[in-house]
Length: 496
Image 1 (cartoon, rainbow, N blue to C red):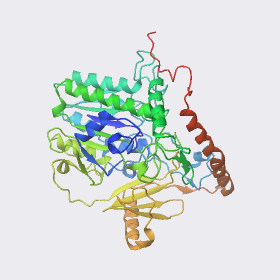
Image 2 (image 1 turned 45 degrees about the vertical axis):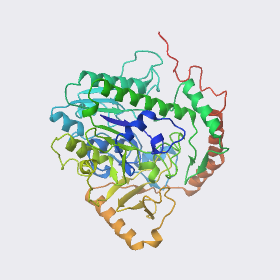
Image 3 (image 1 turned 90 degrees about the horizontal axis):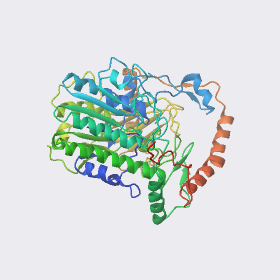
Image 4 (image 1 turned 90 degrees about the vertical axis):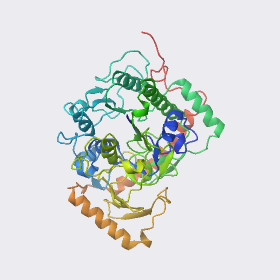
């Protein structure tokens, strides 16, 4: 049972430190699992990260390096961002030649099921084209068309009742699948559209978290300027709080289905996210502090994720490990745990974590790589990263500068120590460049039409107009008389 949450930040759960959001079901799952405190997504945005889960390969190797639909090359100028580089091209659909984790299980007799967000290609590259027997709601969209309450606009998910919640519906579909297949082997992949924007919740949940924020004390300011955009500094958004809690409720539905159908003791459960929480850009929903940044950013807040694996028959309840892992590791790990033959030529950038889960030590000092030759909607910069033996080096493609951090002590990514470790930095930089060349990575190019004056004008507009507007909006959402619209995003359930 693989549970993937969209845009969930590392600190968006009670078990990982949030005092604002309430996630009792996920917290309970985490405490029954092995918790990887240095668990990473393979990308800071969704499509590349999801492709890495499916293929066991890093993004530069499989070629999907940005969210599918993002503009590249000269088309990027249409965004009026006035950036120094033109983003690199990327593959726009999961290649058919990739043997996905679903195909690996299906080949070995497993019934395969997918529900929720796909965003790995359109018609011809849907879940059913990549090894899933059943596809509920998985289409090309990266966000829930029509919102989180029915009627939604999804050809792969029937509208049944006005006001029905999408997140709960996906969980119920998954629970139905579990019930129908409890007597056989199955690989179920629940990929929530939550907690991606548009952030929406019911009036009752908004009120619950609005009152909680009031009791905790509402800060006068909620943002500060990051390099190019404001970024949220506090977890006090009551709409997002409700959205997170609904996700947790949905996880509870699935876990209950496993228990009610008598398969909870022989079903592996994975819980993770595809990238960091959205602290700026798409929406200013959460704060990832003390991690710096969030979705779209090159720092820890953009790539460090909740990463839990529960294997009921192994004695690892509540165990935490700092061993660095990444979402490409799920592929070989799950095959290994299920005694399904590994396919090392496919999951080239993943390792089996079975020894760790069994209480052994892994003596592997492998490097981890990230490659994002694009500009994030959230303020991130085109960069590539190598992380090895507790060190992380970031190479920026705009000007070739580099940053070096020691992990995990500098979690906030605010202590660039490259000037003190020049030899180490050079060695890591050479390894990074060598690997990128080996896998045929694509790079951004300089935009000859770059206009520094317009870029500076845009920055000043962000500081002088966007930032104050965000502060005002935050307080409006926290006001007692807040109401987004008459029916609270269609969340009022009706019979007609």
